[in-house]
Image (cartoon, rainbow, N blue to C red):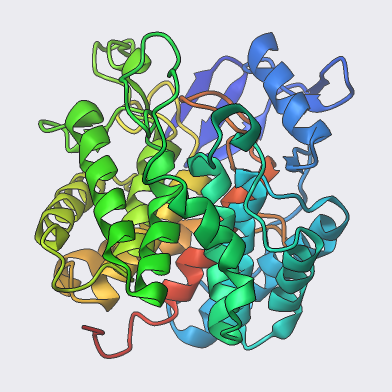
Length: 413
């Protein structure tokens, strides 16, 4: 039986989204009746910043194997990475969105043994003199979590050539955090250093890697202190998911359920992989990290879409948000696959979840290499076109692919 549902101009047929009556925004950017003017304005800004774009007709899907064998994963990884690299070079910057893509390119370089990607990252590092992002230092006096994301790529370039000059600016910037006074946070938020959960992907991976490289436990202590601070405020111990920020904790969907944003929780799942990779096995907080990781993984497994294998932009509301969302889903796959590969998650339980999700991700690759169904920058669930592709979502996909390619390897401990 074919299931059909109509939602504000969106037709969903067996998980495939079809646009009903194509429109364009005042800026000439493709839109649809189910995308409101405010959301479209945000999409237009992201496109103008060259973070990605959206197209009315992305063309046919790529004919790629969805198997989790290394050759099949590599083929999908290369197709997406090559498409993104060709489009990115003229616009590369140091903000968080680009920094997430750079981490993905470093993963592609390692996994595909293709230095084109790491060479492009090397060029960016040299262009910016190995300095962190520059969104907040002038305002705060120290780099906020978004700024710190760039350090993950510098540290990985350092691993290829351990020249202290490559990480010295990052180390100096991070060291200013230890004595920094907390600046005023926005009204209505918790008075935390990291008051929004996206921070857990941006900062802890850099801090943990720096701690591993320098053998300085201050980085581990700092990240652990602030991770559990934000967890105490925003982690729902009933649903085992995070609210994106305090200001959104009281929001409810049409059915009265709390709203948990896919990419926001995806950031946390990816953060477990990026942080536990370097957090010492002997660190006193590690068992607590692993316990929360397992709780969240179990929750994600229970709400995986049975048709697409992916997750919806509003994790608990597949009815109002029927499209799959790729950026959040890719980060979930990153976390789960890393957990399987490192013996933190049960292989028998999670291999089927990751295998199904990987198939769903590959299905979102178009013939030219575009990775679709990526929500624009946001802090909550919102609408987007099936052909929507943004750089941070591609970064998450490439990081996930690196881990999926090793699902059949011996467990790393």
